[in-house]
Image (tube, rainbow, N blue to C red; front, side, top):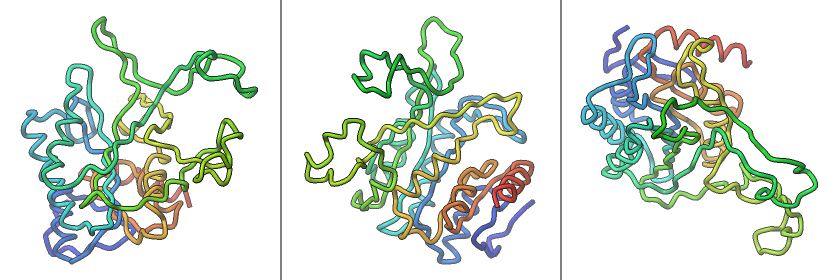
Amino acid sequence: MSYQINLELKPNNIYEIDCIKGLKIIKKQSMLVDVIVTSPPYNIGKKYNQYYDEKPRENYLDMMEELAEECSNIMTDSSSFFLNVGGKPSDMWIPLDIAQRFRKKLTLQNVIHWVKSISIPKEDAGNYPSIIGDISVGHYKPVNSNRYLTNCHEYIFHFTKNGDVELDKLAIGVPYQDKSNIGRWKVATKDLRPRGNTWFIPYETIQKSRSHPTVFPTKLPEMCLKLHGLKKIKLALDPFMGIGSTAIACKKLGIGFIGFEVDRSYIEIARKNLSDNI
């Protein structure tokens, strides 16, 4: 479906439109977004329904730079942009090169490490009664190579206009493992500490059983939104909506959203996923 620049965008909808065109429409309507959460195609050769994720490298980076510019045009000084990107063993620079392109338009305020799988020996986990053995949790896609390690993490780059957006860190806080820390530090007045920039969020990507090859779990955008501060969010945006993880998170948290997606079949799945989560 082809949309014209005079299309009127309304919250709580997913539009079949290229993200750059959609962003230009948002700007034309003088709309502003409080949070952007998205995971663009990583340009690592994944097969989607209607396109193949493998552009010439510089073309892909140019597209990412254009994305940064158009998004900066609809952000306020207090907006956040959470960009989830990964790489492939043969090109681990690509997430960092994307961040460098974004650097021309936005400020990198935080780097979050999304850990999808981790193993911790009991001796390293600490002497806690609740931990009785080695820990191995999460899922990952093994790499068939003698040169490369399996990649068990991805980046979430947190961009803002000026790098000074205050966050609600305890909104995604975790209980203290060592309760003696409560009251020891000035900030530790209750059994809740900031999570930090390493987030363990498990997921499993198996192409044969999934309609989209690179779905991120709903918990990921949910945590990004909470971290920004729910009271400050009127409208969130996902320019690469896929099958609706960000929309579902917004709906769960009572936040208005707009999504763009070029694949009609993914939009249909996203709408069904939204209706299933009523």
